[in-house]
Image (cartoon, rainbow, N blue to C red; front, side, top):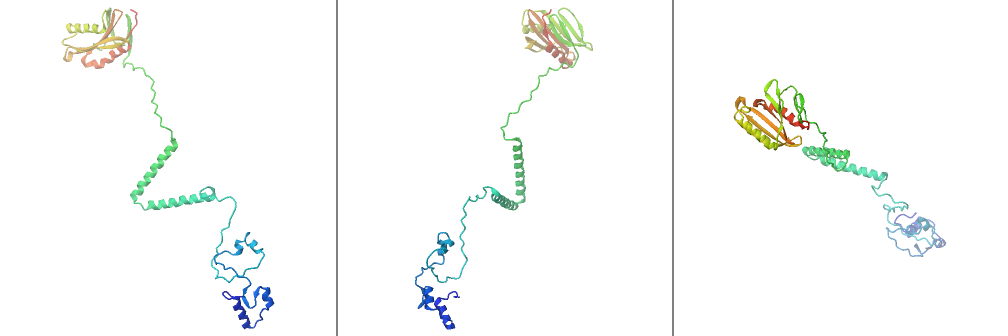
Length: 323
């Protein structure tokens, strides 16, 4: 065997010294060597760089093709000690491998690993924050989760205008006292059931049996005027007739109103003063040459208590045309 770094000539010289039999000239010729210069061949080899591939590597078809080539074998000088081998990456034909994240078990694993790395990094960052900032960040996260859950549960539809509640029309509350209907001489109106009736002809009174100072009067009389003028004339008589209205007479108001869908008028006044003062309110409507009117009179101290009786009369008053 020829040792690394030892030439063929050196090896032959060593064999001669050892007394071994040298090859014959015919054996040199059969090996293609010059017997006078055993270290050389009849061909001049081409120098080869240590980083160049061998003839087998560049031969078409690879090492197998190179092994079948016909021709002399080129002998090379021993090279340097073998170093780390460079292995060429194999070329694989077929479908290309999917890129990371493009699906498949590998993509999912890489995505999960990326999420874990991001979460660990975020956790480490937050862990280094002051305690107050950590608490504030946690509170903000909880608020965002609540808002997101509310949006998911309720959808992202446009807000709609709230529908106002529909309330059914209600009838006006009735009086807190029992009533009776007075229907005579072309009119109909409710009065207290327990109040006693007196009078006839032009006027009829209904008086509280427990307090004679509280009464209502209903009048039907001829009149060719307007409701306002009719009650203005009544106010003038009250001011002059001390028998029916004690001095001093005081007119609180005289105004136009509506009664039973008709244009009407209302007069409010007081008579007297002190403990004997009385308070009255009067409404009138004129239709077909006839004035239909009614009023309430009571002590001043009980007027607010008595006013619902008058309100019931204005609510239920109707002209029937049956006189």
